[in-house]
Length: 215
Image (cartoon, rainbow, N blue to C red; front, top):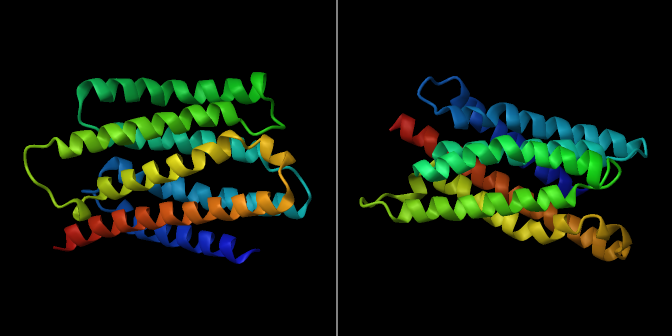
């Protein structure tokens, strides 16, 4: 296991444990509780992928399924933290329709042997669009708020940065097969780094909620 991947697993584990502290509190919003099974699933996916790699088996299908669940989950989170009625309706529809589009791409368009770059790219654009919409709503509020104490702010910041940075790489995932090995490895390292950054921001969001409850 590479050092970067080890750090990534540690960060996801820490994020999972922090969220677990919120899971059993009745006052914790449902979307924050949803992170507990989601983060646990993320750890299982990485363990399963590592096992498949050792067996010289393809990890494409497991990542196709996991990334579909991932984007659907994040859309559901955004639905819960968005306040505009029209935005919520569009998000609700997007949350229901996206997995259908993704699985159609996996099964009928790009196939199970290739990464579903079309469906994933569409999901990235949805998340980037709705996170920007969230920030618009946030800064349009009449009352001033302390952003650093808002879990939603950290979650959306992580999602916006992650999907903005990784969109071009994941969209071109099938082309990466023809990349020179050195370039492909560098891209993999970059993706691990931004993943670590994403889960660090999630951890900060959970810590904000823990500190608020304590105060």
